Image (tube, rainbow, N blue to C red; front, side, top):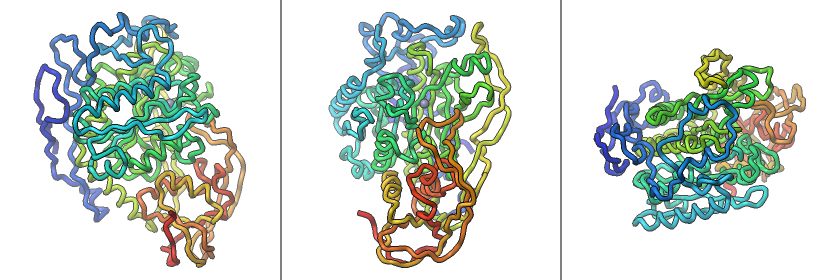
Length: 604
Ligand SMILES: [Zn+2]
């Protein structure tokens, strides 16, 4: 049961997407998944062997960039005589290793990639670039573009997003009305990971006035090139206050994470890409005597309670074509992995399973949520053209997959939203899960010879979650009237919160503390940079009728964001609002176990 995309073989650069025949949608419902629900599934078509976006590069030698990466060629006169990246970077490994990573045939020319530059694109240059692209885009009839202020960094930099669409306008309602999926692209949440940001400037230009422009016939795109400008300005991972914003996407303590949450709430993206870079030498050299090999590491959302269909779409519609696209550019890839900063701990872990990263939290918002990491942390500007090329190749593949699947994705999203909503009051939900221990043969590089070196590692797989704690899924949560910070954070995520309009009672489970200590939030790298101790509590549940006063709150679980609500409100996890003191006291929260019959009102 496979379908083959009709494809035009050509040695010319094809006009991407717009005029290409659309894949035939095979009406093959997934029997197993469909059996569980009355909501109709979108038709499932397996990915074609050669998706449109990853047509092979022409074999004839040509000076133009390969077709798979849709980049407008720059005039030869403006090309630097040698790749800017190699200018002054002292290689932290041998020439033999460096030779494994030749510069791509494409040369990218963002401000930060100009020859002779020692710094990446500045925040002011990004702002000018986005305005330039918005202006250029709107010269094409039918395209609307805006640069939106989405928030302020801790040091007062304006965070901005470029919105590109063929809808009636760039505000969320008009874009929603156009009935096309929206892709949100986020770069450089970690300030010392520049390639994602530079690549998103390239992508912005190609969408606005280059070879990617035709995808706007089928999708909307929102681009935040740099999520953490303060960190970027000083080549630091964390935000200026020292917080790791990519562990803050559930709690929303940082203005940077708040800005991205607000943007996701308003534009409701179907697909979210988070562009990062990973450590190449550092602790890997100390632990394994190796340098890391892969141009790209990739992972989709892997946290508890994700709809099965979401993961399947991420795998089949996105990851598989992405691997083909990378391979077509001679770029290597692997699942995303990292390792603890503890040098005695040689375990390798895939990206975490906690509901705190952008990758996992956007999955809990029922978006297809994709992490792309290039080989970049700790090597300065070394191989920067190749790193940007890797990001551009991967992101181009994601945009093309979305354009190719636009109709199915438009069906998938309401299906997922209904499926999650329909689970309220039913069966069990996972409160806490962990990755599964496995062994893995991981390829690394010998730091002297540059040869591949296979290392057998203990590997925590995030692809198979172990349930550590499960509970009956409530109908909703009652929150005390004092829980205003928690209510604000939930609403920033787009969660519907109701106010109790008259005094009454609800049947529910209250939490009783059985043990409590203070501790720190951990990820697979070690302690999370968030500056605060957490409350690690153990609880038992006590069923009863609970009196609820007017002015307190009710968060129903029959809503699309139900799984995010559970991640925030079950108190005995390290990511919860209670553990992180956004909610004060266990008595502030009750698991409501029957649909409330008292009068509730919408918050304004
Ligand atoms: Zn990162």
